[in-house]
Every structure is written in structure tokens, then in C-alpha cells.
Length: 172
Length: 183
Image 1 (tube, one colour):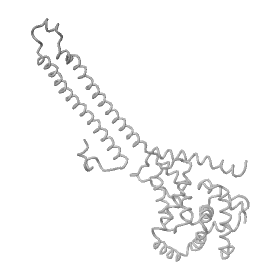
Image 2 (cartoon, rainbow over the protein chains, first blue to last red; image 1 turned 90 degrees about the vertical axis):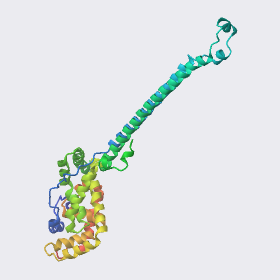
Image 3 (tube, rainbow over the protein chains, first blue to last red; image 1 turned 90 degrees about the horizontal axis):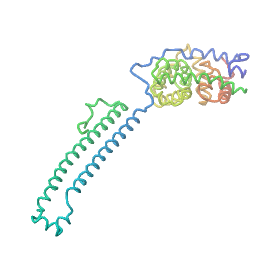
Image 4 (spheres, chains in turn red, purple; image 1 turned 45 degrees about the vertical axis):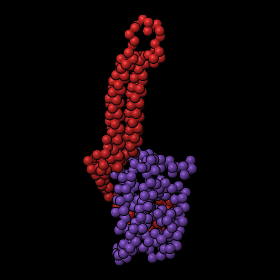
């Protein structure tokens, strides 16, 4: 047996191998064009879901940050407002003799106390409104994030359009 | 330079062609896949023919390339396209036998009555009765007409393994053929 001919068809042809090649030749692959289906597309490596998840997390963090900041700023504002106008309870309850002497009409604690109370209730109402607004913002951000997640999921898994997804009314 | 190094050097340009073609296909160039098909169809055909009845081979080759087209994005290294599609072809052949044992038996009987290629069919049956590594290499060499270095480059096997498989496979085939008696 000619080893070289068997290996790379070089050298003197081996008659036995040649005979086998002749007999088996008709079984050889007959070139045919490969019809790539038009409805198929190769998927590229999936970086999109990772990006979508990262964007969603970022968005959620941003929303939480905004909400936290708004909350902190509203918590600090009323304290400042309360500190300045409200006199110290010691001053109110035990006015010095000098003050009593100068002003015969005693300062009515009711009037003095009413003003800060009104202001504080007004502030509380404003706080509530702002908190509600912040809550709305947060809900909107979360809704946006969940919509983006749904979109990413639909794109990656090829699920039916959004209007066919069950329980969609629960989103937001 | 040793013989193996020369063979590897010869396989490198083809690998770079594969890398470029795989990249092009992933970027949406369908013609690139047609070129990959032209390059690798004989290899896939040979691998399948060594395991599956002839009547089923063409359909299976198309299926394998279709599967490869869909899953090409999972191939990380374009230069491994050959070994990758060869593995798909082997797995598909195994799946074929798992699914349709009865059909295969009927087809084989029917094919036995075809006298035109009966000699080729008989030799092919003998090759199929050899161990896996030998039959695949022998079919690629004797049926598909590929050389040893080409088989090595496309299947990802080392040149030394292919050489040994060819030599031992041929020896076994000769024994079973009775030293070519009646050919």
C-alpha cells in the first residue's frame, strides 16, 4: 500500500485505493445550493438584555435617589420653620419679671402658640402634597422601568405583542 | 520546518477565511453562509454518510446547515467552525438513529435491491462496520476525495491522528474486503 497516496494523493497512485475511489465516487457529495430561509436570521450575541437590565437598575436607583433627596429636604425644611418662630417653652411658661413689669398685659400664650401651629399644619399639608408628588414621580419611574423590562423580555423571548400579555393591567 | 508545521501553516489561511465569513454572517451577510456551506458541505456529507442511510443524507445535511445557521451566534471562535459543524453532524446522526430505527431498517432493505450502486453500497456498509474514528476518516478520504491534511484542518483533529486512522482503517477494510477480491 502506498502510504503517501493514501495520505495526500502524492507519489505513485495505489491501484487498490484508486479502484475504491472509483467505486465509491458516485456516492460523493453533489454540490447543491444552500437556500438560506428568508424568515430566519442569525441572532447576534445578546448584549441587549444585559444593557436593558443595567438601564433599568440605573433608572430605579435614580428614582430612589430623587425620592430620598426630596424626602430629606422636606424633612429638614419644617424643622427650620419651627425653630425660628416658636419661642422656647421656658420663655413662654416662665416669663421674666422684667418682661412682666414692662408689659402689663400678659402675652397670651394662645395667640402666640396658634401662629406656629397654623404654620406647621400648613407646612404639613404642603409636605403631604410634595410627598404625594414625589410618590407619583417614583411610581412613574417604576412604571417606566417595568415597561422597559417587559419590552426587553418580549424582544429576547419573542413573546406575543404587549396587548396579549396577561395581567398587563397590573403593571402600574 | 516539520511536516506537521507545514500542514498547520496550510490550514491557517482557511481558518482566517472562516473567521471572516462567520463574522460576516453574524453581521447579516447571508452570502457568507453560502460560502461556508460550499466549503464544508463535503465534510458534513461524509460524516453523515459514514453513519446514516444514503437516502437520508441529503436532507440531513440541509438540516445540519440550517441548524448551524440558526445557532451560529453561539460559536465564539470563528476558526472552530469546522470542528463545530462536524460535531453537530455527528450528534444529528446519533439523533437520527435514536428516532427512526424502524424506518432505517426498511430503507436498508429497499436499497439492497438497487443493483446500480450495489457494489458501492456494499463497500460503504463494510466501511460503516469499522470503528467510528476509522469509518469517518475513510469516507472523507475515499468517498469525498479529501486529503489527509484537509481532513485534519476541517475536523480539528491532529494530522497524526488522521494519518493513523487512515492507515489502520484501510488495513481493516482490506481485511474485510478479502484483499479486494471480486472488485
